[in-house]
Length: 476
Image (cartoon, rainbow, N blue to C red; front, side, top):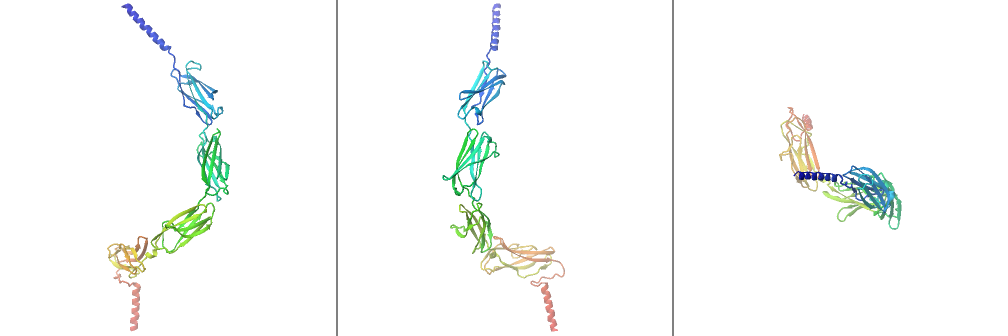
């Protein structure tokens, strides 16, 4: 038993030593290299990025090899790179041209360069340029009265505005053409945008106003990239402008003759034809002026208008290239036809009365016209006045035939002493037409106050006294 026990103990001892030795002598892991997909390329340089990871050591050595068309042209060595680091390498654009294959190879050594354990990875691209892009335009804008025009366009280069070298322009109608080198404004927009412009293309003797032109534009950058765009633009024209219209749109007039008036302007300095039309289905010509100056005002009297009608009209202005139509309307009310004759039946200079008493004064509305007057309303305001027959301050709507009249009994009952006013208004509320009559009311408690006698005022009493004196003097 003793010898067997010792044998078992020896077996366990040597087994433990073997395991420890085996662990201590295990080979280290190779480092891992993760190369960013496709080395990044632009018009300036190529860039290669690698992510370095090794769980056995804290630092590693790295080499980066660049090859162009299978020829190694650049080698970069990095010593003692920390674990879990990002390695970046750049190859200048002078080392390759468009169409060549550019390859990046990153090798990582577990420790120093030349150690047995290493990892590498590579990737390649075909060098190409990022061409400029004409991102807006080319657009035309009118420059002067003779139809010269400006051209503008926005050019974008992803490598930055400093890469752009030239903008060129060709404008043609098939028979005539103009070549121009455009100006470049690098202060425009962000750092990737340039505004290319050319001011005043004057070949309008060959190019006709509003004629469609083929516009071709090129933008070149320092990397040899070219952006181009073709579009169709017409030779620009500024159409005439219509302003200061009389009567204003949706306005109201009140006459049998209304003056139509319009001011017109042509920014190209050309003569214009100006016409007024009645805007019915057929468009009846009312008036026309030809060969007007570049800025002028024209007018015409429209006669024989009827009341309560809405009139539609429009202005047609032509500069020989384009025409502009502006439409308007107005409503003709002819207010005089709605007015009525109104008056108090007895024309008092004033009403004198005691407080807390009532006084009734007749008020008449007459239609002396040859046509009916409809939707009239008579109302009373002030001096506690009401329409006695209606028991309210308003009569409501009523009509008067030609020669017809209507008499209202205006009752005033002021209870506060002093000077008051009673206002009686007759109106047609549909058209804002009204007639207002006013009378003063004096409220006093003086004992000399006498009952009111319709139609006899102070002056009339004095005349009666004077005539009576003369009469009796003659008798004597």
